[in-house]
Image 1 (cartoon, rainbow, N blue to C red):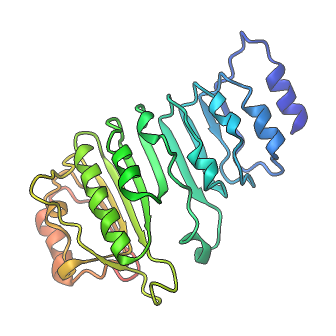
Image 2 (image 1 turned 90 degrees about the vertical axis):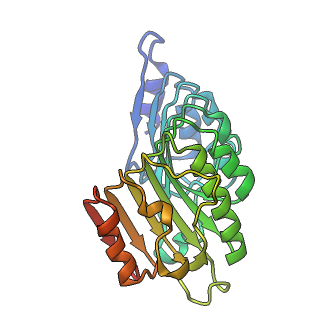
Length: 270
């Protein structure tokens, strides 16, 4: 690994290395990552399914980077906060943890996410400072795919959901895919995998009419029905539901109202 990285760094500047895919590589250390951060011509960097747990601050030296894939790693917390890459389009995250741990440990939101105006995919990030972070997300007017994890008590989940709906309204002209996972950690949840949350939009808010894919987990809808704005998404062709506890009549509404629906995935307690 060291020899390979030394070779890559030693390449003549006229040889511009744009893509580096280290997915599945074992033994990556912090020193290796610091060396990678010297390859400033990189536009695509994949550390997927590696044992990387920290990103050096030098990651911000990759000023041309458009895709950063850290799925199935343990990168989280402050390492995510420090990411500031103006040209980044795709930030792909998740964690390589057991099911029990996964609901409690997620990659956080970069603190200056609102300034990454080229962002198109922001995948599976945890909202920790609801209003502030989601206001920033609402500034990403090129965002096509958004995946968020809302963690906290029921009141925190409701506040975060309200702020998320405001952000979605701002993104209504670009957003095509939306994933929402609401998580209430033990002992707060008393073993209940879902939280009662109002997802109805207020009058001045507008639905993302371009939305084609919707994934919702851990939201117990009021009156066991999908919110009205979801039932009006005429471009929606794919829905995945888990721990939503919808009534059978609400599920029938999907077929009656969503003419373009082609794929309906009903997971546990949907």
